[in-house]
Image (cartoon, helix red, strand yellow):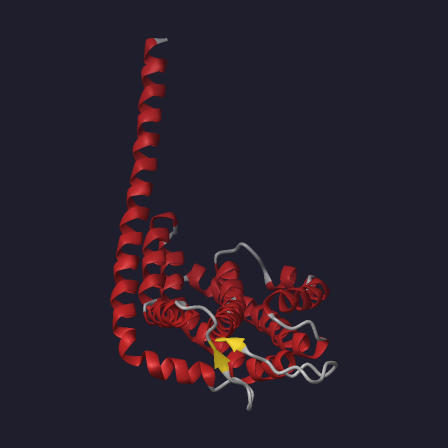
Length: 254
């Protein structure tokens, strides 16, 4: 009886130590990430004016951006620098996430996760670029030149404008990660391309639901502009999953 009690206490102590170690690792990774974002945010002040011009270039002609609160301009300026710093620090932040997850992964899973990191960044930037060059101009034109109401001139605050642009860019950028996620899940055996293929019709409906959440406009045209690429990304993810499963037997026989 005493031996069993001692064993339980030992296991409980090991569990506490493991939990403490995980919390310590989270804290360390968060500190590294915060330092990286602070450094890149400081560096982004050099390019802040260009970033402002970059965002303002999407506004329709004839629409002037204003600030209506005393501190709105400086707070928006700081937000833009912070957003730019987070984008610049994205590779390092992704690396910290991988390093935190690494102990829970097998050697093969670690290798594939490292290989997918560049693809994750590329797909995110591709999604943000699609939103900036294709979707945002049409959405802003619809929102700021609403066709059913005449005689009202838009006076858009710079803070609201920047927040809307950033929310759309980040949202669409994250959506574009779908193929990479599906590839990785198929590679580690969580899903298969056959299983994913059976849910195509649900993915089609889900694409419009996601587009309705991400897009700031209620009109079906702008929603479709986002929904169709989302569904095509799902189809691309099925292809990636198929490729991941084809390579698995060869690796197993090596």
